[in-house]
Picture 1: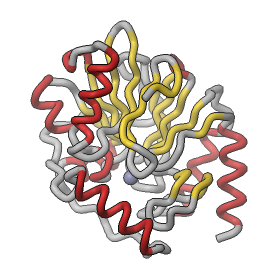
Picture 2: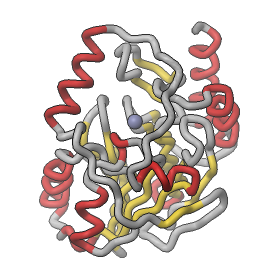
Picture 3: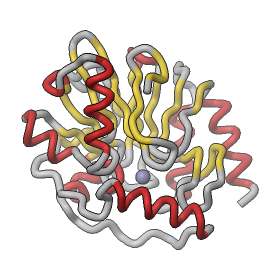
Amino acid sequence: MQLAPGLHRIGNDIVAAHLIVTDQGITLIDTGLPGHLADLQRELDALGRPRSDIRGIVLTHGDSDHMGFAERLRRELGIPVFVGEGDADRTRGAKPPATPRDRVRILPLLGFLAYSLRKGGFRIPPIGEVHPVSDGDELDLPGRPRIIGMPGHSPGSIAVLVPAVRAVFVGDELTTRNVLTGVTGAQPAPFTDDQAGSSASLERLRDLDVDWVVPGHGAPWHGTTAALIDAYRAAEAAR
Ligand SMILES: [Zn+2]
């Protein structure tokens, strides 16, 4: 679906991935779960664009529910996969450390697990080759994505600023729908390695001039980053 001209979304509020669509080609921000490849193909068909228009993939971090079909497309199209340098090992198959235990509600948790199962989320192939990126990098991809280092959710978590579509993609540095509880609204994300670090990193977004803040899980936020961060702070204080 189209969120704004040039900004498209596949998946849903449980797990989503995004496309930057330009005349020069397409950039993917995250690749969801393996089964989302069919959703991507439907989106491309609706746009009338061939798969070969995809020029590269940027992963907001190296967790499995964001790298779903990245290896498949990398091999098929010979395109680069970019990831924050601190998460490169994860994308190549290293097991991330256990995260502090999160609060859970049973129905949303079962919904997440069922959706993941249906989309092949328990068999994520490692990525054969990744290009590590770091804070301040600007990538030679459609939309000229800029990298903002956001350590916290994972060591190599990044935000991806795409001025061409006035959006910043924040991965799991925050969520607007907690997959484990079903609670909606801006809030800390589950499965976070370093919550204090994640919370501090968010301030790096406060002054960005964007219309959209797009998390990996939950509805995209249409509004300023400052308003989003303030909503997050309120949820954080209520925990
Ligand atoms: Zn995630």
